[in-house]
Length: 620
Image 1 (cartoon, helix red, strand yellow):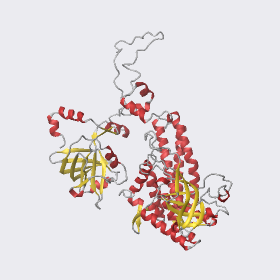
Image 2 (image 1 turned 90 degrees about the vertical axis):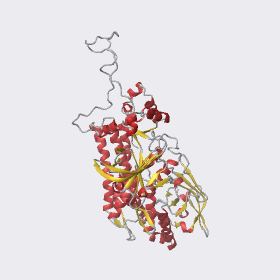
Image 3 (image 1 turned 120 degrees about the vertical axis):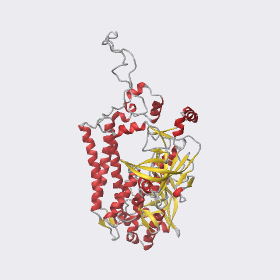
Image 4 (image 1 turned 30 degrees about the horizontal axis):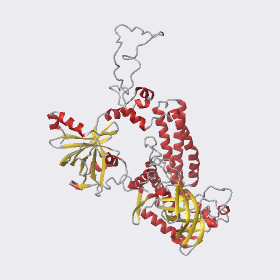
């Protein structure tokens, strides 16, 4: 499954969410102490207002990691089994064994941090009839028979989101079962690989072959919604939570507080989704310079207001919290969450419509990744002039000015060149015009312009490694590294104060600079992305202060922390080199937002042509 082209990307997205729970930067938000070690925050029932806020923050962190576009991230059904376990009395109405089954299953899923999918809806056949009245008695999933080992189930359910990637499938029903549907009233959970269980996934938006530049969202957040078919599947008794009671199946949402707990998660995700699409709309308007138009400002203002309404309703639901029926926990207020549900169903489509309106024909005429790559290699003047967005790309030469020296001679109506003023040059090539205007000496440089200017300078790429106070390895990709002094041997690393590694590097006794080889782009990206076990599967050597070295790097510099200096939004960390190693290979370069590989022959030629004094002063 992990190698299937259509499922590889979403599996990676889900894996990154789980990895974030082990990242020191997020662990305090995403996990809570459990009876057998840390457990996911979404598994823990809230008992105070602060707990509700903490759950909101955990939902937010995972939602932001997926831009709010992964509709059934693991925390959704973690919340479901937590809600079931918090109200054992609901299931005990059919017998204590069902309440015990729920409690055991909750602990099993919580302690093993399993990923669940669910299927609530019956196939859309004749919707005027109940499940029991369909032409085929088991077209909709139902219990065929009860045996000594459990229930035998047959029929179909939908819409199991991310089912091919899940560990377990949990089944329950939306309210709406009718008298006579008793055999269809069942709540249970089974492993996704249970014999007789089949998954029929819809056609994917991305089958693994789409260009990620052209389709950045569908290429990352395909959710593989599936039809679930039960072919006489045996559900063991210890996995059965309810069966045979239409009344109790219909009351499940209300009496377990399920609707409020899951609505809290979906509400926070909806807020993040609104923030994302609003941000895209604002950036689009700024890019094509329409953000100063009053009617555009009105539309953007409406999106901001709709987004802030989502935020207000989430917080109102937390403030208006209620005590659960069992008295063991709290739940968010019902009315703000229902209002938020209705608000999102109207505001998000409106936001998409605004985005389409602002983008207009430009959305259809956006150059593909293949076109951009072609123009970067061989920029043709016609396309470059017609696509100003590409002309702003720092990799492309600027468009020739329409006026000034070098323009085509002006002609009269008869085609005869008009005379020019004396002393005015008739021929020649216009000097390149800057892509952006130069800032005055007294002005504060524009941040975007500053980034673009600095991007013109190629650097090497390093991975800086250290250890946390509890001995866990940590690392991040850094290009802001350089030599400072040969005697004493000093180097410096600049680290963004907002990065998770900042606290570690400014307090750790030392660090190791691992200089990457030209073919180690994947390693650079691995240590640049947030979350995940970055050291998994890597060959390491532990040296001074037990700090890991990446064996595959072409150079290692073991440094003791010498000093930490303030550098605005960065800290400058000076290191005194205590040990080093150099290996064969060409370095990885980074410039203009991308990696640059130079052939070995070009490296050899550059070194051969370098003056002796350059070789003598080159850093180690």
